[in-house]
Length: 119
Image 1 (cartoon, rainbow, N blue to C red):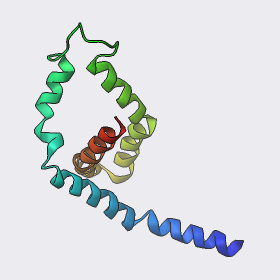
Image 2: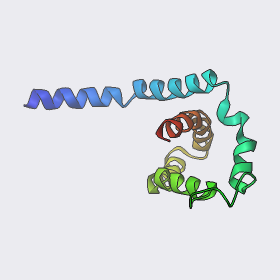
Image 3: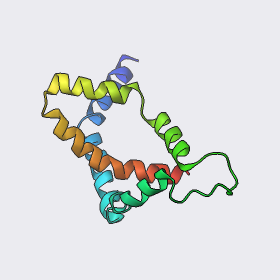
Image 4: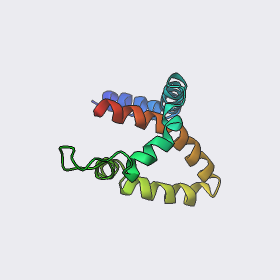
């Protein structure tokens, strides 16, 4: 049992290192390039949808676009994301903000397609 525990610990420490970083970054870049920067090309349209430009009060349903987005964001953004930024700045210094922005730009494509598949 001790061998199995050691194997699992070694495997987990390996996977949570460089391979996971390459997988997440590579996947985000692949989706961003494959979609021809779709999350950024239609950013203006998405803001117009949120502001209610395409809302029709006669449409069936009770939830407008803003309420749907707020619900989706509430399930995604939690205390870990808020505290994670503070911890990254405290440990890594102000330079951590640059890498947070880089990961946000790449991660937006991953999140966009994850939510698209979920809907």
